[in-house]
Length: 426
Image 1 (tube, rainbow, N blue to C red):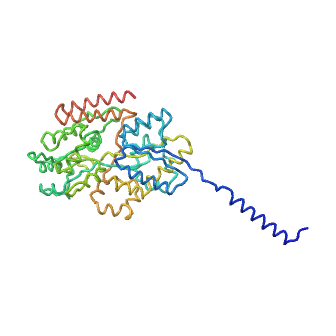
Image 2 (image 1 turned 90 degrees about the horizontal axis):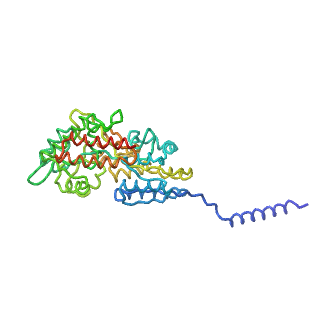
Image 3 (image 1 turned 135 degrees about the vertical axis):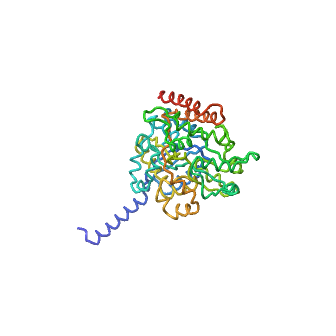
Protein backbone atom coordinates (compact mmCIF):
# COMPACT_ATOMS: atom_id res chain seq x y z
CA UNK A 1 0.00 0.00 0.00
CA UNK A 2 1.29 3.46 -0.96
CA UNK A 3 1.82 5.84 1.93
CA UNK A 4 0.12 9.24 1.97
CA UNK A 5 3.33 11.03 0.88
CA UNK A 6 3.60 8.92 -2.27
CA UNK A 7 -0.08 9.42 -3.04
CA UNK A 8 0.33 13.19 -2.73
CA UNK A 9 3.33 13.22 -5.12
CA UNK A 10 1.43 11.20 -7.71
CA UNK A 11 -1.56 13.53 -7.46
CA UNK A 12 0.65 16.57 -8.02
CA UNK A 13 2.27 14.95 -11.08
CA UNK A 14 -1.16 14.14 -12.51
CA UNK A 15 -2.35 17.71 -12.00
CA UNK A 16 0.76 19.11 -13.70
CA UNK A 17 0.31 16.69 -16.62
CA UNK A 18 -3.35 17.72 -16.96
CA UNK A 19 -2.40 21.40 -17.03
CA UNK A 20 0.23 20.73 -19.70
CA UNK A 21 -2.32 18.95 -21.86
CA UNK A 22 -4.78 21.83 -21.41
CA UNK A 23 -2.17 24.42 -22.35
CA UNK A 24 -1.11 22.43 -25.41
CA UNK A 25 -4.70 22.09 -26.63
CA UNK A 26 -5.99 24.78 -29.04
CA UNK A 27 -8.05 27.54 -27.41
CA UNK A 28 -11.81 27.34 -27.86
CA UNK A 29 -12.91 29.82 -30.54
CA UNK A 30 -16.26 31.54 -30.13
CA UNK A 31 -18.59 30.88 -33.03
CA UNK A 32 -18.90 33.90 -35.30
CA UNK A 33 -21.85 34.63 -37.57
CA UNK A 34 -21.35 36.67 -40.72
CA UNK A 35 -24.04 38.98 -42.03
CA UNK A 36 -24.14 41.03 -45.20
CA UNK A 37 -25.78 44.46 -45.00
CA UNK A 38 -26.27 46.63 -48.10
CA UNK A 39 -26.93 50.36 -48.47
CA UNK A 40 -27.09 52.70 -51.44
CA UNK A 41 -26.70 56.49 -51.39
CA UNK A 42 -23.17 56.43 -50.01
CA UNK A 43 -22.83 60.18 -50.44
CA UNK A 44 -25.87 60.72 -48.20
CA UNK A 45 -24.51 60.05 -44.73
CA UNK A 46 -22.78 56.79 -45.64
CA UNK A 47 -19.89 57.62 -43.30
CA UNK A 48 -22.24 57.58 -40.32
CA UNK A 49 -23.29 54.02 -41.14
CA UNK A 50 -19.66 52.96 -41.51
CA UNK A 51 -18.94 54.43 -38.09
CA UNK A 52 -21.93 52.71 -36.48
CA UNK A 53 -21.15 49.25 -37.85
CA UNK A 54 -17.42 49.64 -37.14
CA UNK A 55 -18.24 50.47 -33.55
CA UNK A 56 -20.55 47.46 -33.40
CA UNK A 57 -17.73 45.19 -34.64
CA UNK A 58 -15.40 46.41 -31.89
CA UNK A 59 -17.88 45.41 -29.20
CA UNK A 60 -19.31 42.22 -30.72
CA UNK A 61 -16.78 39.59 -31.77
CA UNK A 62 -19.52 37.00 -32.34
CA UNK A 63 -21.01 38.87 -35.33
CA UNK A 64 -19.04 39.95 -38.39
CA UNK A 65 -20.80 42.61 -40.45
CA UNK A 66 -19.87 42.78 -44.11
CA UNK A 67 -21.18 46.24 -44.90
CA UNK A 68 -21.53 47.13 -48.59
CA UNK A 69 -22.02 50.79 -49.47
CA UNK A 70 -22.44 52.29 -52.93
CA UNK A 71 -24.03 55.30 -54.59
CA UNK A 72 -27.07 53.61 -56.13
CA UNK A 73 -30.39 55.40 -55.70
CA UNK A 74 -33.09 53.82 -53.51
CA UNK A 75 -34.91 52.65 -56.62
CA UNK A 76 -31.78 51.15 -58.21
CA UNK A 77 -30.82 49.41 -54.96
CA UNK A 78 -34.34 48.04 -54.62
CA UNK A 79 -34.45 46.72 -58.17
CA UNK A 80 -31.09 45.00 -57.73
CA UNK A 81 -31.91 43.47 -54.36
CA UNK A 82 -35.33 42.24 -55.51
CA UNK A 83 -33.54 40.53 -58.41
CA UNK A 84 -31.00 39.11 -55.93
CA UNK A 85 -33.86 37.67 -53.88
CA UNK A 86 -35.06 35.74 -56.95
CA UNK A 87 -31.49 34.63 -57.71
CA UNK A 88 -30.92 33.47 -54.12
CA UNK A 89 -28.13 35.98 -53.45
CA UNK A 90 -29.98 38.52 -51.33
CA UNK A 91 -28.19 40.33 -48.50
CA UNK A 92 -29.26 39.77 -44.91
CA UNK A 93 -30.43 43.38 -44.59
CA UNK A 94 -30.82 46.39 -46.87
CA UNK A 95 -31.32 50.09 -46.26
CA UNK A 96 -34.67 51.46 -47.45
CA UNK A 97 -36.73 54.62 -47.48
CA UNK A 98 -40.46 54.71 -46.90
CA UNK A 99 -40.93 55.04 -50.66
CA UNK A 100 -39.56 51.53 -51.32
CA UNK A 101 -40.37 49.71 -48.08
CA UNK A 102 -43.60 48.25 -49.46
CA UNK A 103 -41.75 46.68 -52.38
CA UNK A 104 -39.81 44.44 -49.97
CA UNK A 105 -42.82 43.67 -47.82
CA UNK A 106 -44.98 42.80 -50.84
CA UNK A 107 -42.20 40.58 -52.18
CA UNK A 108 -42.84 38.32 -49.18
CA UNK A 109 -39.17 38.31 -48.17
CA UNK A 110 -39.05 41.17 -45.63
CA UNK A 111 -39.00 39.80 -42.09
CA UNK A 112 -41.04 41.46 -39.31
CA UNK A 113 -38.74 42.97 -36.69
CA UNK A 114 -41.16 43.18 -33.76
CA UNK A 115 -39.58 40.21 -31.96
CA UNK A 116 -36.10 41.58 -32.70
CA UNK A 117 -37.01 44.90 -31.09
CA UNK A 118 -38.72 43.23 -28.11
CA UNK A 119 -35.52 41.24 -27.48
CA UNK A 120 -34.02 44.55 -26.28
CA UNK A 121 -36.85 45.82 -24.03
CA UNK A 122 -34.83 48.61 -22.39
CA UNK A 123 -33.83 49.98 -25.79
CA UNK A 124 -37.34 49.55 -27.19
CA UNK A 125 -38.79 51.56 -24.29
CA UNK A 126 -36.60 54.54 -25.24
CA UNK A 127 -38.00 54.85 -28.77
CA UNK A 128 -40.47 57.48 -29.98
CA UNK A 129 -43.60 55.45 -30.75
CA UNK A 130 -44.92 58.07 -33.17
CA UNK A 131 -41.81 58.03 -35.36
CA UNK A 132 -41.79 54.24 -35.20
CA UNK A 133 -45.05 54.16 -37.15
CA UNK A 134 -43.20 55.23 -40.29
CA UNK A 135 -41.43 51.87 -40.36
CA UNK A 136 -44.56 49.73 -40.04
CA UNK A 137 -46.77 48.07 -42.64
CA UNK A 138 -50.13 46.67 -41.56
CA UNK A 139 -49.18 47.18 -37.93
CA UNK A 140 -45.90 45.22 -38.11
CA UNK A 141 -42.42 46.69 -37.84
CA UNK A 142 -40.64 45.91 -41.11
CA UNK A 143 -37.64 48.24 -40.90
CA UNK A 144 -35.27 49.00 -38.05
CA UNK A 145 -35.24 52.82 -37.77
CA UNK A 146 -32.13 54.71 -38.78
CA UNK A 147 -33.41 58.23 -39.29
CA UNK A 148 -36.61 60.16 -40.01
CA UNK A 149 -36.76 63.61 -41.56
CA UNK A 150 -39.67 66.05 -41.51
CA UNK A 151 -40.39 69.07 -43.73
CA UNK A 152 -38.73 72.30 -42.59
CA UNK A 153 -38.75 75.90 -43.74
CA UNK A 154 -35.16 77.11 -44.23
CA UNK A 155 -34.85 80.86 -43.81
CA UNK A 156 -32.06 83.16 -44.98
CA UNK A 157 -32.03 85.38 -41.90
CA UNK A 158 -30.00 88.13 -43.57
CA UNK A 159 -32.43 88.36 -46.50
CA UNK A 160 -35.35 88.34 -44.07
CA UNK A 161 -33.98 91.29 -42.10
CA UNK A 162 -33.11 93.21 -45.26
CA UNK A 163 -36.73 92.82 -46.39
CA UNK A 164 -38.04 94.11 -43.04
CA UNK A 165 -39.03 90.64 -41.84
CA UNK A 166 -38.28 89.06 -38.48
CA UNK A 167 -36.74 85.55 -38.74
CA UNK A 168 -37.76 84.85 -35.16
CA UNK A 169 -41.39 85.14 -36.33
CA UNK A 170 -41.41 82.81 -39.36
CA UNK A 171 -44.46 82.30 -41.63
CA UNK A 172 -46.98 79.86 -40.18
CA UNK A 173 -49.62 79.80 -42.91
CA UNK A 174 -49.93 79.96 -46.70
CA UNK A 175 -50.98 83.59 -46.63
CA UNK A 176 -48.01 84.46 -44.40
CA UNK A 177 -45.49 82.62 -46.56
CA UNK A 178 -46.87 84.30 -49.68
CA UNK A 179 -46.62 87.71 -48.03
CA UNK A 180 -43.03 87.04 -46.97
CA UNK A 181 -42.15 85.69 -50.44
CA UNK A 182 -43.51 88.88 -52.02
CA UNK A 183 -41.14 91.00 -49.91
CA UNK A 184 -38.15 88.73 -50.58
CA UNK A 185 -38.67 88.57 -54.34
CA UNK A 186 -36.61 90.81 -56.61
CA UNK A 187 -37.62 90.08 -60.20
CA UNK A 188 -35.01 92.42 -61.68
CA UNK A 189 -32.25 90.46 -59.95
CA UNK A 190 -33.92 87.09 -60.65
CA UNK A 191 -34.32 86.44 -56.92
CA UNK A 192 -37.24 84.42 -55.62
CA UNK A 193 -38.94 84.57 -52.25
CA UNK A 194 -39.45 80.85 -51.83
CA UNK A 195 -38.76 77.44 -53.33
CA UNK A 196 -40.68 74.31 -52.36
CA UNK A 197 -39.79 70.65 -52.69
CA UNK A 198 -41.05 69.38 -56.05
CA UNK A 199 -39.79 66.00 -57.41
CA UNK A 200 -42.38 63.78 -55.67
CA UNK A 201 -45.38 64.02 -53.36
CA UNK A 202 -43.46 64.17 -50.05
CA UNK A 203 -44.28 67.82 -49.38
CA UNK A 204 -47.55 67.72 -51.29
CA UNK A 205 -48.93 65.00 -49.02
CA UNK A 206 -47.93 66.95 -45.91
CA UNK A 207 -49.73 70.06 -47.17
CA UNK A 208 -52.68 67.96 -48.27
CA UNK A 209 -53.06 66.29 -44.87
CA UNK A 210 -52.79 69.66 -43.12
CA UNK A 211 -55.54 70.95 -45.41
CA UNK A 212 -57.79 68.02 -44.42
CA UNK A 213 -57.27 65.83 -47.49
CA UNK A 214 -55.67 62.45 -48.18
CA UNK A 215 -53.81 60.69 -50.94
CA UNK A 216 -56.17 57.70 -50.70
CA UNK A 217 -59.72 57.82 -49.38
CA UNK A 218 -61.32 55.55 -46.80
CA UNK A 219 -62.61 53.43 -49.70
CA UNK A 220 -59.07 52.74 -50.86
CA UNK A 221 -59.52 54.77 -54.03
CA UNK A 222 -57.32 57.69 -55.14
CA UNK A 223 -58.22 61.02 -53.53
CA UNK A 224 -55.56 63.11 -55.25
CA UNK A 225 -58.11 65.03 -57.31
CA UNK A 226 -60.09 66.21 -54.27
CA UNK A 227 -60.86 69.88 -53.58
CA UNK A 228 -58.15 69.86 -50.90
CA UNK A 229 -55.60 68.54 -53.42
CA UNK A 230 -56.59 71.17 -55.95
CA UNK A 231 -56.18 73.88 -53.30
CA UNK A 232 -52.59 72.76 -52.57
CA UNK A 233 -51.63 72.83 -56.24
CA UNK A 234 -53.37 76.14 -56.87
CA UNK A 235 -51.47 77.69 -53.98
CA UNK A 236 -48.13 76.56 -55.43
CA UNK A 237 -49.15 77.57 -58.97
CA UNK A 238 -50.09 81.01 -57.64
CA UNK A 239 -46.60 81.52 -56.21
CA UNK A 240 -45.04 80.64 -59.56
CA UNK A 241 -47.50 82.77 -61.53
CA UNK A 242 -46.72 85.83 -59.40
CA UNK A 243 -42.99 85.30 -59.81
CA UNK A 244 -42.40 84.49 -56.15
CA UNK A 245 -41.21 80.91 -56.81
CA UNK A 246 -39.40 79.17 -59.69
CA UNK A 247 -40.88 76.05 -61.31
CA UNK A 248 -38.11 73.46 -61.63
CA UNK A 249 -38.46 70.26 -63.64
CA UNK A 250 -38.11 67.07 -61.54
CA UNK A 251 -34.98 66.03 -63.45
CA UNK A 252 -33.28 69.34 -62.59
CA UNK A 253 -34.47 69.95 -59.04
CA UNK A 254 -31.74 68.08 -57.18
CA UNK A 255 -29.04 69.88 -59.10
CA UNK A 256 -30.49 73.35 -58.52
CA UNK A 257 -32.27 73.73 -55.18
CA UNK A 258 -29.15 73.92 -52.98
CA UNK A 259 -27.33 76.32 -55.30
CA UNK A 260 -30.33 78.67 -55.45
CA UNK A 261 -30.60 78.87 -51.67
CA UNK A 262 -26.88 79.03 -50.94
CA UNK A 263 -26.35 81.82 -53.48
CA UNK A 264 -29.11 83.90 -51.91
CA UNK A 265 -31.28 83.67 -55.03
CA UNK A 266 -34.02 82.01 -52.91
CA UNK A 267 -34.94 83.54 -49.55
CA UNK A 268 -36.91 80.60 -48.14
CA UNK A 269 -36.63 76.90 -48.93
CA UNK A 270 -39.28 74.38 -47.89
CA UNK A 271 -37.69 70.94 -47.98
CA UNK A 272 -36.69 68.01 -45.77
CA UNK A 273 -34.78 68.92 -42.62
CA UNK A 274 -32.06 66.44 -43.68
CA UNK A 275 -30.67 69.13 -46.01
CA UNK A 276 -29.56 71.20 -43.00
CA UNK A 277 -25.92 69.99 -42.67
CA UNK A 278 -25.13 70.32 -46.38
CA UNK A 279 -26.96 73.59 -46.95
CA UNK A 280 -25.64 75.46 -43.93
CA UNK A 281 -22.05 74.38 -44.45
CA UNK A 282 -21.68 76.48 -47.61
CA UNK A 283 -23.40 79.80 -46.90
CA UNK A 284 -22.18 83.20 -45.75
CA UNK A 285 -25.43 84.06 -43.99
CA UNK A 286 -27.24 82.75 -40.93
CA UNK A 287 -29.90 80.09 -41.47
CA UNK A 288 -32.81 79.39 -39.16
CA UNK A 289 -35.47 76.71 -39.46
CA UNK A 290 -39.19 76.69 -38.80
CA UNK A 291 -42.08 74.22 -39.05
CA UNK A 292 -43.85 73.85 -42.39
CA UNK A 293 -46.40 76.63 -43.04
CA UNK A 294 -49.89 75.19 -43.60
CA UNK A 295 -53.19 76.22 -45.15
CA UNK A 296 -54.91 79.01 -43.21
CA UNK A 297 -57.24 77.32 -40.74
CA UNK A 298 -55.64 73.89 -41.27
CA UNK A 299 -54.28 71.48 -38.67
CA UNK A 300 -50.53 70.92 -38.80
CA UNK A 301 -49.40 67.41 -39.71
CA UNK A 302 -46.37 66.51 -41.81
CA UNK A 303 -45.16 63.47 -43.69
CA UNK A 304 -42.20 61.61 -42.25
CA UNK A 305 -39.54 60.44 -44.69
CA UNK A 306 -38.16 57.32 -43.05
CA UNK A 307 -34.80 55.61 -43.54
CA UNK A 308 -34.27 52.19 -42.02
CA UNK A 309 -33.07 48.65 -42.64
CA UNK A 310 -35.18 45.71 -43.73
CA UNK A 311 -34.14 42.21 -42.68
CA UNK A 312 -34.16 39.69 -45.52
CA UNK A 313 -32.35 36.84 -43.75
CA UNK A 314 -34.42 33.67 -43.33
CA UNK A 315 -31.92 31.41 -41.53
CA UNK A 316 -32.53 31.63 -37.74
CA UNK A 317 -28.82 32.05 -36.94
CA UNK A 318 -28.45 34.79 -39.56
CA UNK A 319 -31.61 36.47 -38.30
CA UNK A 320 -30.29 36.56 -34.72
CA UNK A 321 -26.98 38.04 -35.86
CA UNK A 322 -28.66 40.54 -38.19
CA UNK A 323 -31.04 41.59 -35.43
CA UNK A 324 -28.12 42.24 -33.09
CA UNK A 325 -26.36 44.38 -35.71
CA UNK A 326 -29.48 46.38 -36.58
CA UNK A 327 -30.24 47.13 -32.94
CA UNK A 328 -27.01 49.12 -32.83
CA UNK A 329 -28.72 51.72 -35.03
CA UNK A 330 -31.08 52.78 -32.24
CA UNK A 331 -28.78 53.06 -29.24
CA UNK A 332 -28.73 56.56 -27.71
CA UNK A 333 -25.14 57.15 -28.76
CA UNK A 334 -25.65 56.11 -32.38
CA UNK A 335 -28.94 57.98 -32.69
CA UNK A 336 -27.12 61.10 -31.52
CA UNK A 337 -24.42 60.58 -34.17
CA UNK A 338 -27.08 60.11 -36.84
CA UNK A 339 -29.11 63.17 -35.85
CA UNK A 340 -26.08 65.45 -35.89
CA UNK A 341 -25.12 64.19 -39.35
CA UNK A 342 -28.62 64.20 -40.86
CA UNK A 343 -30.60 66.85 -38.94
CA UNK A 344 -33.22 64.16 -38.49
CA UNK A 345 -35.69 63.66 -35.64
CA UNK A 346 -34.30 61.48 -32.82
CA UNK A 347 -35.92 58.04 -32.59
CA UNK A 348 -34.38 57.51 -29.17
CA UNK A 349 -35.78 59.86 -26.51
CA UNK A 350 -32.84 59.22 -24.18
CA UNK A 351 -30.49 60.57 -26.86
CA UNK A 352 -32.53 63.76 -27.07
CA UNK A 353 -32.66 64.25 -23.32
CA UNK A 354 -28.99 63.74 -22.41
CA UNK A 355 -26.87 66.88 -22.55
CA UNK A 356 -23.76 65.01 -23.66
CA UNK A 357 -25.66 63.44 -26.57
CA UNK A 358 -28.21 65.80 -28.14
CA UNK A 359 -29.20 68.12 -25.31
CA UNK A 360 -26.34 70.55 -25.89
CA UNK A 361 -26.68 70.18 -29.68
CA UNK A 362 -30.30 71.33 -29.57
CA UNK A 363 -29.42 74.11 -27.15
CA UNK A 364 -27.06 75.46 -29.82
CA UNK A 365 -29.57 74.84 -32.63
CA UNK A 366 -32.97 75.69 -31.10
CA UNK A 367 -34.73 76.22 -34.44
CA UNK A 368 -33.70 72.72 -35.51
CA UNK A 369 -35.31 71.33 -32.36
CA UNK A 370 -38.56 73.09 -33.29
CA UNK A 371 -38.92 70.86 -36.36
CA UNK A 372 -39.39 67.84 -34.09
CA UNK A 373 -42.53 69.35 -32.55
CA UNK A 374 -44.52 68.77 -35.76
CA UNK A 375 -47.04 65.90 -35.55
CA UNK A 376 -46.18 63.42 -38.28
CA UNK A 377 -47.62 60.56 -40.32
CA UNK A 378 -45.94 57.95 -42.48
CA UNK A 379 -45.38 58.94 -46.09
CA UNK A 380 -47.94 57.00 -48.15
CA UNK A 381 -46.50 54.44 -50.54
CA UNK A 382 -48.26 52.47 -53.26
CA UNK A 383 -47.96 48.68 -52.98
CA UNK A 384 -45.16 46.78 -54.66
CA UNK A 385 -43.02 48.42 -57.32
CA UNK A 386 -45.74 50.85 -58.40
CA UNK A 387 -44.76 53.62 -56.01
CA UNK A 388 -41.77 54.70 -58.08
CA UNK A 389 -43.97 54.95 -61.19
CA UNK A 390 -46.53 56.98 -59.27
CA UNK A 391 -43.90 59.36 -57.91
CA UNK A 392 -42.51 59.92 -61.41
CA UNK A 393 -46.00 60.66 -62.73
CA UNK A 394 -46.62 63.04 -59.83
CA UNK A 395 -43.45 65.02 -60.48
CA UNK A 396 -44.21 65.38 -64.17
CA UNK A 397 -47.82 66.40 -63.62
CA UNK A 398 -46.97 68.84 -60.86
CA UNK A 399 -44.49 70.54 -63.19
CA UNK A 400 -47.21 70.83 -65.84
CA UNK A 401 -49.49 72.47 -63.29
CA UNK A 402 -46.83 74.85 -61.98
CA UNK A 403 -45.92 76.00 -65.48
CA UNK A 404 -49.57 76.45 -66.44
CA UNK A 405 -49.60 73.73 -69.11
CA UNK A 406 -52.68 72.28 -67.41
CA UNK A 407 -54.93 73.50 -64.61
CA UNK A 408 -54.65 72.03 -61.14
CA UNK A 409 -57.96 70.25 -61.62
CA UNK A 410 -56.97 68.78 -65.00
CA UNK A 411 -53.54 67.67 -63.84
CA UNK A 412 -54.76 66.04 -60.64
CA UNK A 413 -57.54 64.20 -62.45
CA UNK A 414 -54.88 62.81 -64.77
CA UNK A 415 -52.82 61.79 -61.74
CA UNK A 416 -55.85 60.11 -60.14
CA UNK A 417 -56.43 58.07 -63.31
CA UNK A 418 -52.78 56.97 -63.36
CA UNK A 419 -52.92 56.07 -59.68
CA UNK A 420 -56.13 54.08 -60.08
CA UNK A 421 -54.52 52.06 -62.85
CA UNK A 422 -51.48 51.29 -60.70
CA UNK A 423 -53.61 50.26 -57.73
CA UNK A 424 -55.82 48.00 -59.84
CA UNK A 425 -52.76 46.26 -61.30
CA UNK A 426 -51.86 44.81 -57.90
